[in-house]
Amino acid sequence: MPVQKICTIAEAVRLNEFAYALTLDVGEEMAAQTSCGQFVHIKCGESRLLRRPISICDWGKSTLRVVFEVRGEGTRWLSQRKTGDALDVLGPLGHGFDVSAKKLLVVGGGIGVPPMLGAAKAAAALGAEVHAALGFRDQGHRMLTEAFAECCRSMSVISDDGSTGRKGFVTQLMEEFLTAQPCVSGDCASCSGKPVPPVVLACGPKAMLKAVAGVCAAHGVDCQVSLEERMGCGVGACLVCACDMADGHRKHVCKDGPVFNAKEVDWND
Image (cartoon, rainbow, N blue to C red; front, side, top):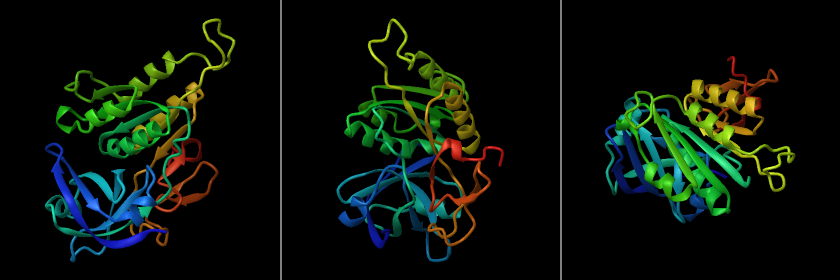
């Protein structure tokens, strides 16, 4: 069950000109319930009625780290908090990623990169072979790549303007990675037994996730996506974050997600 409590900021770090990281002392009860892909709902000042949903980047025995960019008044207020300040936190919330596969490709775009670090770490801790494909707007928005390099077998980075060393979209990195994988039929003379197909986990803007889902469908690999939607309550009581599914039903990103199988989502929404 989610826990609501007043948590102390153990560390406040500015990762770049745009992104901030807060390590929260949430206690063992909340931390023990956490899994990769979940989020917390943080109250951002007394004058703001609605909490702000922030993805969990990673966690420890009694701490959670969240990474965010300033997108409005709430996150601006949050970016001004310092070590030792207290925050009203509700979490962990939502359903996260399944990282039980033996080989995974984690794909992050922009502010969707931080939650993929938690997924990469969790999968690596289980003994999985983890690879990362990360996309940023430019070098100034780049973050957490050193941490990915520590837990991933390989890591590729790309940016919209090429300032990270390569210009393009993260789906290009995916295409190259998936094309380089050996066939999964077991009939190829170069294969010693049936190779393990990768599972793709992704978080980022919806347009990116739609493209990621398309690439995965073309290559016949499983794909899980973490959707970003505006949220009111964070627990499924309101309809703010409802999204359309491929079967015609609607689900709540906060309660039923934020992680879904890519095949579930109506990408024409």
